[in-house]
Amino acid sequence: MSPVGPQDSLIKTLPQWNQLTSITTTADLNTPLAIGPEADVDQKWWKHFDDPTLDDLITEALTNNKTLRIAQARVEEARAGRRAARSLLLPQISGSVGAQRTNLGYFTADQEIGFREAEFIASWDFDLFGKNQARTAAANAVLESEEATRQGVRVGLLAEVARNYFDMRNYERQIDLTRLNLEKQKKTLEMIQAQMQATKASDLDVQRAGAQVSTTESLMPLLQTAHDAAVNRLNVLQGCPPGSKDVLLKTKRHLKPLDHHILIAAPAKVLANRPDIRVAERRFAASISAKYVAKAAWLPDISLTGFFGRQVSTPFSSTPWGISALLVQPILNFEQIQAQIDAADAQQEQAFLNYQQTVLVALEDMENALSGYLHETIRNASLSASADQNRKAAALVTKKYNSGYASFLDVLVAESNLLIAESGQASSDYRLRDDLVNVYAAAGGGWSD
Picture: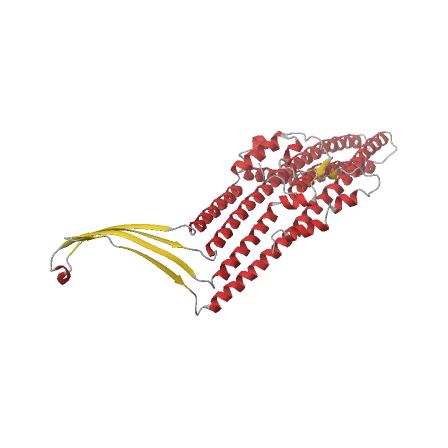
């Protein structure tokens, strides 16, 4: 059973991404993504955003993030396990040195004697049937699995840093927009209050304007809380206590426009590049070796042992040595061995099915990420048009109100709609970046330096 079987079979049925195929059939849509057979998975995808702050955050996270360092420590643990498994293929040599002073009564003629000895013992398991080699292969597969797990942690870390950074910038922008609209609404309230004193406006208009100001003010604490949470999360992702990087994070920066014309790697390259698929494949390989080890328990163990020493006592000395061979064959524990084989067979089946499921989930992740980004691009264009239209409408209504051709309620509705439209457009601008990060992460980008 080949570890690459499930991946190969799924690649044959999916030569390209469904989302990219379907989106090109949408009328009058200039698709922002394209699949290219020559395109590779971008390992430094965050550079496309051309944001020095994001670059600094990612560099710091790769150096100090605790979760990534834990994953690296697990790799070192697995590497030690492989060395231990390899050592079983080599002769084992030990030595001992001892000395004593004793009187053994009759055996030493009731005389006190001194006794000193030194010896070397060497043993070697022939591994005639490859049991220890299978253990070494399993340990090597476990090590490669842990290395791929570390790579997966790195991919997830980079994506989380970028998402939280863009979320922080989004809340920062939302706060600015809300504050700007709040200032406009307060000026409108002051104007209405002045008109009421001149009997040109009613108390109802004053109450409506005041209610709108209060409603807008109520948004600020929620936005600030979300902004602070994103900042704190970014600090922790850098491996620092909250507040350590606030000077860097709270420096405002206008994000550059996205380059929407991005080549996406084909499914075959994505599946070959994702660390989680590599993890599942290596665990499947380890289960194959573990099953062979279980089956090899039926076969005899053959080992060779030799020793050489030097013994000195009063008044004699000697140089004992010996060579022996040992064969151990299971006789009456067949049920235990068969149970271990059955367990190993079930574990191999689980690993194989987990590998297939991991490939399917990887395809699902990529399709969902592509769908999110492509459809958010369409939504963003509509929201941009809506914001422009609401700005013109608000200006027109205000002009008509000042001329007496519109009610104050029309003004309030126009200003409210403008705030909603601008907020929606700003959220979509940042969501596009989040969705693009999801595309890069789903492709497995970022695990390699």
